[in-house]
Image 1 (tube, rainbow over the protein chains, first blue to last red):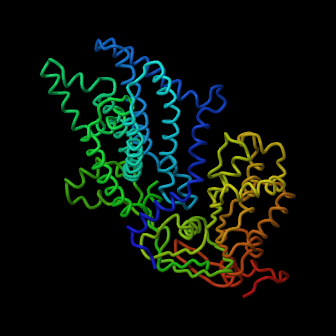
Image 2 (cartoon, chains in turn yellow, brown; image 1 turned 135 degrees about the vertical axis):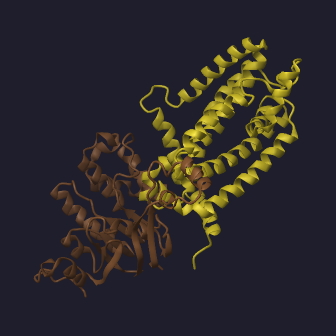
Image 3 (cartoon, each protein chain N blue to C red; image 1 turned 90 degrees about the horizontal axis):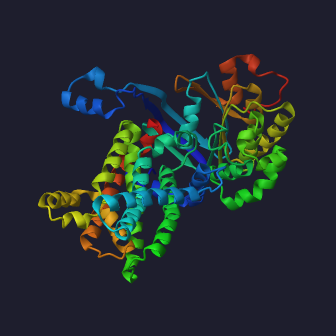
Length: 272
Length: 257
């Protein structure tokens, strides 16, 4: 008896999860690979993040006339989270194209490639948390037990990274233009999302035009993803609406990804 | 129970040229309506209504010209391609050996490649650690195993890949020819190990142009032509039909019909 296409989509995810040992190893391998033969190795991930965030922090603190101890932590945390999100989306849009050889030669659930990608991005994120830890020492933040909300927040972001990679991966394998389109959009969203500019400052700007325009950011889904984790990591006020938006996107996104998988999962091997 | 069953399974490849693979054309095509010739994606029919029943113990050779569909059939049997029409049901753990290079990383050591390759073939890390010494001995690579794979010659790579592949215990073994580039002495050794591997496997499908290899490993055969099965039967029958009587020298005593 052959399972239904929907059953097969779930089976793919289950079987992919079952091969943790494989993608777990490959994810590590990807990181070590990138810095092979370099003296500092994966520490470069941490260093380059620190350098960029500090430089941007100094630059924008000067431009907006904000104190460095406010601007720098804001940019740094935003930047670390954005690194994870943009990594999942950008690499997700070519996840199957990049693994053409493996897909055509070894039978494995397509979700294996997505899990490997997400795991690799999580490892990058973990390396960058070192910068966050150092920042906490230099610029202490008012952390409370409520800051632990950062953990479920990250879990939600990971969950979203997975459906985005699956969906974007499948569609862009069929339509190759989608990869560059996705990457341009992600680049643009970096500026439209409050990462280098402080959301509350612009909303409360004395200039009503600026305040009105800043409010448009509420329509930007990335704002909510950044907020649910940045606020707890900086010990700032947490707002429930960001969580609700993210939860809604998680559900809708996964339904969409499963539907596309149901219809097109088996086509990926034909398209790559 | 190990088995492979396909019913009228077809594999059709859409061939997207740069234009039809782009969103622009699809979107414009929808808007513009009836451009029949321009809107259709050309399709290559790689397999057409293939029906096979392979049971535990089957030793099947695949013969046919280049492009006849042997490799595509192997991929269908491996579950890599799900049929575009018809059905293909595979019971058992599949170990496909199509391209010895896939999944090998030139930048990491031979040992690490052994592990990764094994994981890809469905083994666990523990199982591979147990086999590593055996593989090292078979490949005769010695200290080279801790060197990055890029320092290996082609022959050394083949040794490594063969070492891993022949160390596993597959339920279904799918072999595609292309195991050249090894010195004669090693090939003898590899042949013994391949023989052992085949004996351990529940089911073997082997695509090859070498009559000698086929006679050694297979008892039945499938002859592919233009993506269809032209003939199925005992190896002797099929090979004789495919190549003529000289493919079956009388002095060889094989050929359980």
